[in-house]
Picture: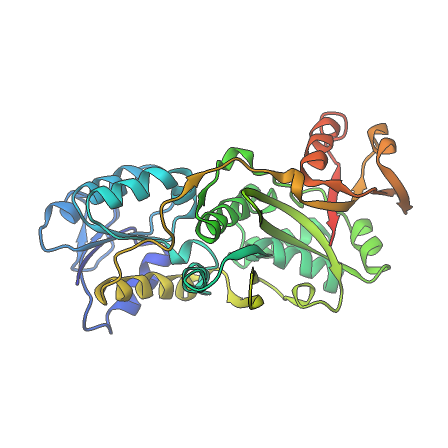
Length: 375
């Protein structure tokens, strides 16, 4: 199979290196505006979809533009597309899948969720036999690294974030990680595949960890709890709940023990119950490996997406309920408080939708508010 690739950054270099040993895959073009010093280099994007021998286009540029323009051009030309870009796929989900179907092209994005874990292909496989009813997990290595080091190493949020940036886990602007947007895109894609739906990204609430403090972590530890940043999705009848939130878990639970920048994602099915997948959620070679695996699947005859035709549904977070740890100076907490943990309140049982409404009301009064579900 002849391939053209867009991007030659961290992931692109990994794909290029791993693909050299694959006799069934030929890298013909690598698109980059820089002088990257390889014979396949091109600065002309059109080479990738105008060459009739190119069967598959890999997109590892990242971002929305010009990735969107290049990917849609490739699909319109009937080229298969493999991407690691969760932001792109989550934003243009319906359009990209429709274009692929219209032009007889395959569309795969296994590396977009879970890096090297192969999570989306696991969902695809289990769905052939039984319905998936829920999924949850650690889907972002940066936030897990920060929370693990605050819990186990006694670091402040600022110090743990600085270490994550120095190690390359977090960007100079870490907002997408610590505010939950990265996880939101991943849990949206996971829910779409698991439940055969198409969810609107703008309706998925994200409670981040930007405001978590040393005192919060001490509060959790003194009660045998560990804070983890989780993406969640649940199907009840025709309703789908999807949300991202810090969650307090018993310290001896499997998810609470996940270290450093690792991911752990779990699905629950109707017949066989819970199944968990653990591994590197990011990084050059883990992510690149799933990009190359997608290409090998295509070369082996795979032509479909992971799920069937998706139905458009709203997010229904009134079906998911938790008690919440809520630290705020706003008097609005009094209406929902059930008990006190140090300077923080613990709320009565409330839906995620209700908590989101309360959080949005508190935030203008108290920009340092922090909320975590008690799992």
